[in-house]
Image (cartoon, rainbow, N blue to C red; front, top):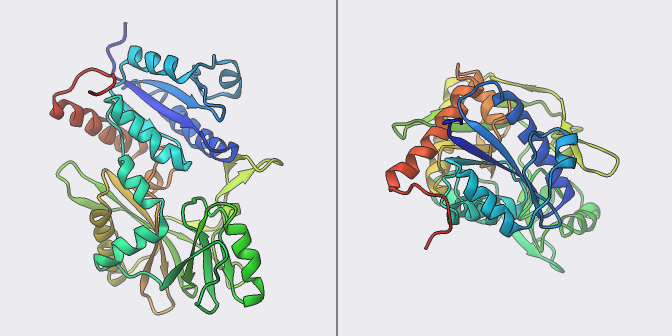
Length: 354
């Protein structure tokens, strides 16, 4: 019988086929990469749109299709029997980033990455930008509108659902004639919409910090996405390939560079932005940010992206690789840290708290 720690990989979506597809793409990449490491016993657990759960032997389509579906009560018993030492979340829908992370806490399973409260904050773009701005981080001017309202701001500006990721419902409005269509699209995803001053295209960067065991924050090499005046923002199509039904089936390829060419003055500005944001939001283990640099070289916080599935294509993993840290070293550092948190708390068994 294996004595290796069991690591549960929580996948799927309780919200949509789209986010189940996103989850499967990233989780599959992670599990394939770590399959030969032999450090942990890795177990996939999928939450399905109908509320059922399954535990496929691997993430192939055949294994996922043939896995037994069970109720949440049965899944809880299954998880208790597995007695996982840690859980890696691969869920990208709002319930997955919040409620299901809380579920892990209730089950007394240490979570790799940011806790549910931090994720709940970061998924609300208005609250996130307000908090980091209070801690000295530069953000574009913005206002929030509800259904039936129109913004006071004049174009050009961005229209974004307040609680939605992967650029769903996002549009650049350059003329008022395009406003209503953009609002209608955004309100399909949320009842609140963020209207944000468009930052003229200078550079589009992703900036991340990786928390070390001594609590210091390492600024990882940045990724730059190459956009044009004709195509000046990143949309969902820049990120994921979808099938005819709109369900993600893979990662999009496109113009990007890592490490980006960053001079020292800009690097220090980015380090300050990421460090302040990480601390302001209460992040744990790592954090990742979309940053827009204007033509004058000033970086603006756009939004926080506080998740990582640890596939080789995951942004934090790809950045760390350019700092000499491979996927295995990053993954095992953070899994071992999560296990240590539970040991430090003096709790050993998996099960409902209380």
